[in-house]
Image 1 (cartoon, rainbow, N blue to C red):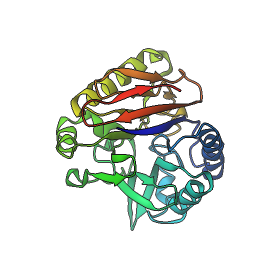
Image 2: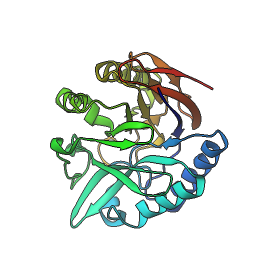
Image 3: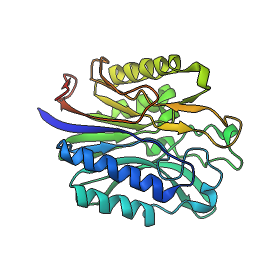
Image 4: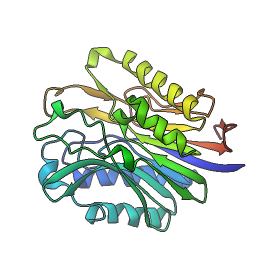
Length: 262
């Protein structure tokens, strides 16, 4: 039986505010360390904001300046970090997520596959389904997907074949203001379904804020992050439309995972 203490970091993210977003990330890490977390999980595009056209100019390569800063924070606070961040590779922009260990080493990078190209011009470049994978860690086999990747049955089938112990998912779960809090129920159902299918705990971390660009401009991110155990039961729900940070201890052991709040 392996146990891992996960800090679910539901932060405010402001488009293009790299320094402000890094400060909010560090505030969350201070809390995560104080609560003896092993890994801190952050939302999608937490450095520059999701579907932000300015990221075409502002994003950095991975590895690169921003991922190195995340590594420095992991070393400083002595915990693993999973975080969504935009990635520039030549003339391509990817919606990516990384996992770094507590020494700051980059363990894994995932590029989002289901990128919703209608929301930004030019859109994010697509990752490849064949690159879905897991990474062996001291806490077991950890997988990382991003938001709409979890909509696609074939992506989850591929991941299930790899037998993960834990799935970490940065989300950018946005909806018109009037659709909250009901929209959170859709995320809850999705997290429950995918965790049950994979038979491993799943951590889905949304952000708080507002979309500032594109056809979804004005939609808000409502928080309400969820953690489900390997039976598909919700074991933790964060606040609706507010920043929040909670730490939960997950016990992972094949298909018989348990979870409890401290």
